[in-house]
Image (cartoon, rainbow, N blue to C red; front, side, top):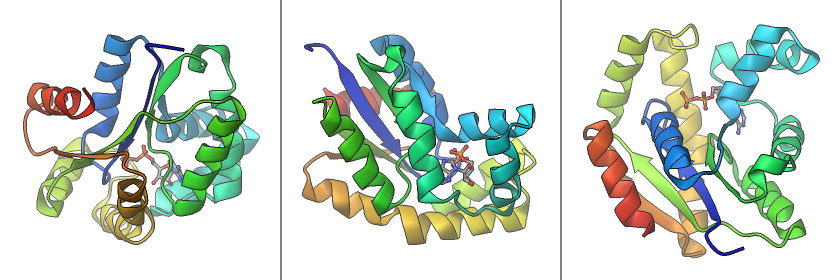
Length: 186
Ligand code: ADP
């Protein structure tokens, strides 16, 4: 359908992509879907999923691809996502990118763009320390950055090859980064 928006925000932990996802979602009238928020809610509720992922999340590791596929398939299948979405935190691995592709294919949809919000690592560490969330202790931050470099960063090339990647320098104010993203996807 014309006017649909399907974006993925890609970036290291603390890059501000969650904040940007919310702003873009408001503006474009589609839901912001954060797999990190969904998992944290599951943990808070103490659901089966929450109990399954709690210790994995607090170690800085990734939840396994099969579990994430189930979570995302269910979420994208809901009515509010039919007209589009801003995905934040998924995909995080190459197999997840393939899962997303096949979910979208089945409904005849495709991504408009994948926006890489890039921020220098020193800045990410100081932001994370300031944020002080429970999964943000110094060791866990380092582990999450390591996992990002190893598992998630390869998605940059993957989406470059598909001509979907738009790179945005995320080392600026929230408003400025938002402007850069809007320019990049226009
Ligand atoms: P941030 O935005 O700070 O990078 P998130 O809130 O997106 O982090 O995710 C927090 C944690 O939730 C991750 O460290 C990971 O354990 C889990 N998680 C979220 N999304 C995924 C995913 N797509 N695949 C695997 N694990 C995930």
